[in-house]
Image (cartoon, rainbow, N blue to C red; front, side):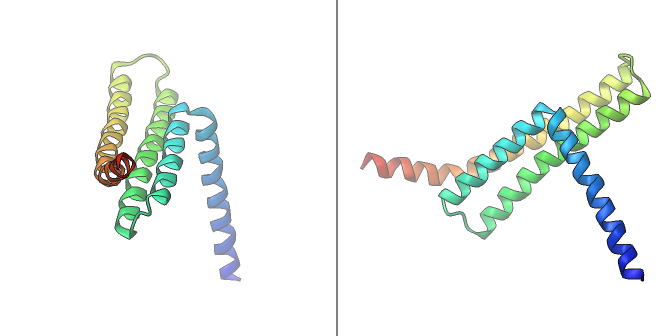
Length: 129
C-alpha cells in the first residue's frame, strides 16, 4: 500500500531527526543553554500575555537561534571528519559558522528587548506605584 510506505519512511526520518536532536542536546552545552533560554522566554511570554504577532516573532527568533546552533554543530562535526588537524581553512569555516550563531543570537536578543522591554517597564512602574 503506497500510503503505508510513505508513513513508514516518514517515521524513519523523524526517528533519525530526533536521534540527532538528542545527540546534539547531550553533547552541546551551548545548545542546552539556548534551549533553556527558549523555555524561559516562552514562560515570560505566557506571564506577560503576549499577542499572536509577538508569539510569532518570539518563536521565529528562538527557532532561528537553535537552528543556527544545530547547523554550526553539524558543520563542526563534518569538518572534524574531513580535517582533524587544526587547518586554517577548517578553523575559518568553524569561526564563520560560530559567527552566524552569534549574529542570530544578538538580533534575537534585540528583538526580545523590543518585545519584553515595554511590558517589563510597565510592570516595574506598576510596582512603584
